[in-house]
Image (tube, rainbow over all chains, first blue to last red; front, top):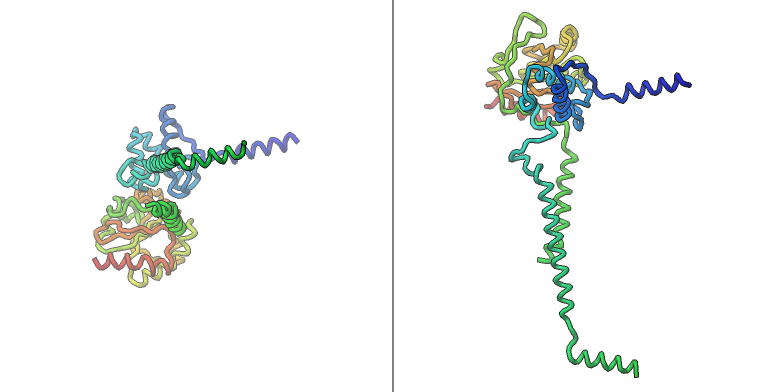
Length: 155
Length: 176
């Protein structure tokens, strides 16, 4: 029983790992930069995965490339630019701010503003009609009639 | 005014519906290449069948051509290969990049299935592939006579794709 359990646990431990590479980094900072870069860059093959998680051959190549460039002392910007030059902005999970990504960056805020605008409009209009109704008071004749009706009920 | 406002939700719904409907027929695997309009990146790689013969980007200039990235491990390439043979038979210039492949296997493949390629570039490490932004084989680049990349097709070319999409693009490059 114990052995079966151990086997199951061991197989779980093996399968739950994503891509593993054994790279030797110069220091902790470099390892950290490698981690951020591979997590921020998107795999061109298996979209919706970053290149840290992906097991696609191209993700493996790109990890190798990033490791190589880190070793050469290149900055994060240089590495990202290098990959963008080859694979386009697509590989960035953090798209750059430029003319054709304006809607992407500010679209949500824009839609929120439009939503608030509509809400404001609706609320103001409701309030106006509500106060309009309060203005409609009874005329002199109506008041008399109301009084006589009430009097009739209670002689 | 009021009536127009009433129609607004319908208009928004229709706009969203059109967008989403169009999205159903887009292929998310088709990425626009970052290299369109740029020259083929510089390289210096041996030929598949002759390690002594070094090929470079300059060898690709002169005539519009297809630059086909392939490998023996790539299943779709096998389906594509007869189509390339046929195109080569029609006089279309095709160059091959043997991408991250075993050289012996590649030679055997070309012997066995016929070689449609004018130049056979041996990119064993995938360095040219990386510079070209290749993320899987097969991929085919269309280059004009100046060696500028003009189009890219990802996936296997079949007869229909060639006839309907790619032949006009190639003809355009030839007519220039």
